[in-house]
Length: 161
Image (cartoon, rainbow, N blue to C red):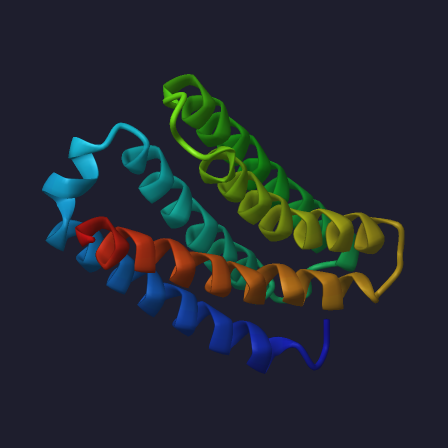
């Protein structure tokens, strides 16, 4: 994992800062978030996604760690994001009103898939000795920033429209 330290250090700092800002943003609109039954699970999933990026980048900093070990850590991280996302989507469908557009329930599923998949693929590649898995995992750390910013926007701005 030589040569990746600067990337992981930068991503840990950025993920921690974004997670903190997200918590503050949620606290500003907590009454509005709690008033709509579909938003608390979405808020939780948004936090889980950025926390997973933070954890994965932190794990990448472990000294003298084998690629296979890091691969398994990435697989577990991806599974956690996928399972918690699946629970969120199940809850969204359970609470879905007939008038609600289907997209409102499917969009969070898309976010979970594009967030969890790179870590899963990258982890499996590393476990099988393919160092290109590091690039997949890097994507699995960067993509959550995009999905977290989108989720934060909904919880901070769109909720007030």
